[in-house]
Length: 520
Image 1 (cartoon, one colour):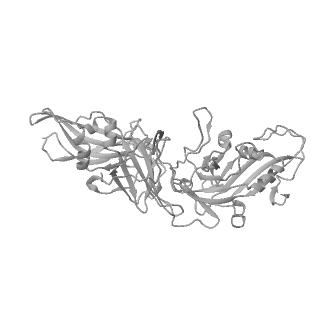
Image 2 (cartoon, rainbow, N blue to C red):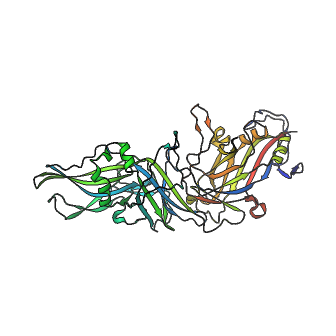
Image 3 (tube, rainbow, N blue to C red):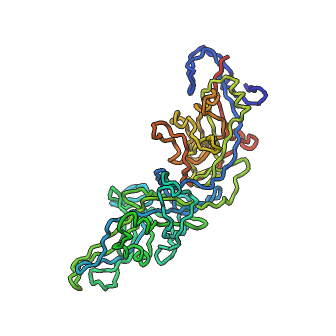
């Protein structure tokens, strides 16, 4: 049975027919425990959706622990093209000794930027473990151009304008520095592979004499805590440049302290450029193996001109301290179809979702409804997003609220911290368990309190975005819930969703549904 509330045309789709029940009733999200006689039904409300173009997101590790840094190019025809780069300080090594003496000679052989890939073991055969790279997007067979540059912007952890506050870096920030650190000043072609478990290079055989130029093949590996050789990215850096910047300065005041070093060498920029290729997540917080710049050298023990012994050693400068992401975004080559909208992570796109205007809100309040459930569902355009591995596994919903100072504050919906287990937002698959189908959020607590007129519950628009690990609320210093939503996002995936147009999208239109009980 369909019923209208007032003249608003709100459809009440009954669960079967309105019934009167002589039984106890427990209502989720309200203080109502029992009712003797009530009728139940559903209200289906139209949803108004407005796309939001993201200009930038917070991209530093100063204010949050970042688990993933993406590197590469991802040209999704249904979303913005992403050129994802990384800026990082280097850790300090105290008193690196490379000073030649009458009995010891040091020779720098190779300098490598080494970053382990995120990979999963797929099994071991004949003592050889194979891996699968995690979460690569795009085509890894198409080379992405990578340049490593010296960063000349000081990465201050404190706000230069107000040192009492932490600093903030955004994804569109620019960093000075044009000195190319790549070997021979060239371009490294990134084609990530799970078999990249060894890097082979030519090393001079110092065991013959200090003036020998004969080389042999040497190897570099990245070994994890299980003593397995894991896949890693290895970018050769220019020996002459790095010798000048580092090796020749080890005994100078530039390496006398961490403060002196951080000011002298302000880090590196790993810059990805191109029109296509792949993008890969990197865990820069990994400790074993740690991402680093490795100075591979030979220490020779000598007696005059006689070589007594040689040892292969390494100075390893970890990528640590301040680490920032940089996202260069280019508009999608294909616009979203009519009555569709795109949600994309990083500096991609979000959507404003208006579920209640003031007139409908007042009408609902006048009905004295007991809210059993309130849900918001968005259906995936399956002709565009048919692969669950490239589709966001979770979206997130919050509210833009006026903070009273004329500014908008991203604020958590109450269900996120009161009904965490049922809040939802995860991707649901179709019956084939392969095809992305929909995302559903349950906002029962929010709607219950909103209709009850509780303080701090408003009908201001909601915002839909790609979920990020920093999205869920944290505990404040006073022990309460921090209701501010952080503006981080490093998930580059995108999904095209159907909007609330019933004519175009039928039963798969975006819909806000309220299930209720009402005293007869």
